[in-house]
Image 1: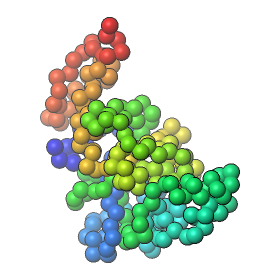
Image 2: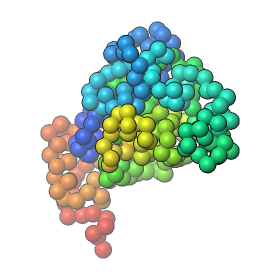
Image 3: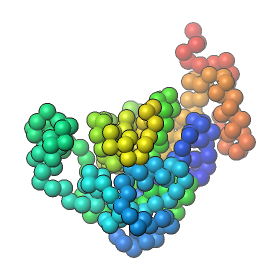
Amino acid sequence: MNSQDAVIKINGLLELQRKVVGVKIVTTKAEYDAYDALELTKPMHYCVAVKCAMAGHSIKLSKLTAGCSGGNRALGIVEPLPQFFDGSSGCRLGLYKDNVIAAGVAKTVPIYPPNTYGVVVKPLELFEDDPDIVLITAFPRTIMRLLQGYTYSYGLPAGMLMSGNQAVCVECTVTPSVTDSMNVSMLCAGTRYNANWEDADAMVGIPFSKFHGLVKGIECTVNPIEPDERKKRIEDSLEQANLLEIEVEYGKTYYKNK
């Protein structure tokens, strides 16, 4: 199954409201220039670029156009300042009780080393090659299905990290890359303000290497999980795309079987 088919399949399985997005971290200008995407003339927050990609746009952010200091630090576009690690900058924002707590968080959350030239963000089906991370935004029930599909194929997600801060950059991009596992984020105040997400939105980040298995896991759990009305819509959608690989069983779910 190629990425285009995987995107069609996951949309048929989950009826996603926004596009599945791929993210590629690049370390050289030559690699950056090779990707077909809009190169910005004004700074934009990484999370806003992700929101735009979920609407179908392809965007490249470089050191000159990545507009969020926290996101730039997390993604390795800039080097962290000493105030980040000693906790004074986080404490100054009012996000932590004191410098000790803020410093402990700063030393625990994963960030990329500061050698990133730029970031490419675009709908997954438009990527020229394999991205590093896949991002999906959805409501809680859909996140449940993503977790079920991941756990079916790979077991429990490893190293889950959630703080309600630095959601799209740290929680959904860097963390899945470091843990090689799915991570869930409730988003953060910054991205909710800058990208104008809906109140019920949440996001998951998945290493691209685990994406196809995730999709397979969601399909393989349709029969025990989904009610018949959803099964019918899934069956119709995947049959139309010639991508249905299971026999849909009606009248059977694990929570109704005795």
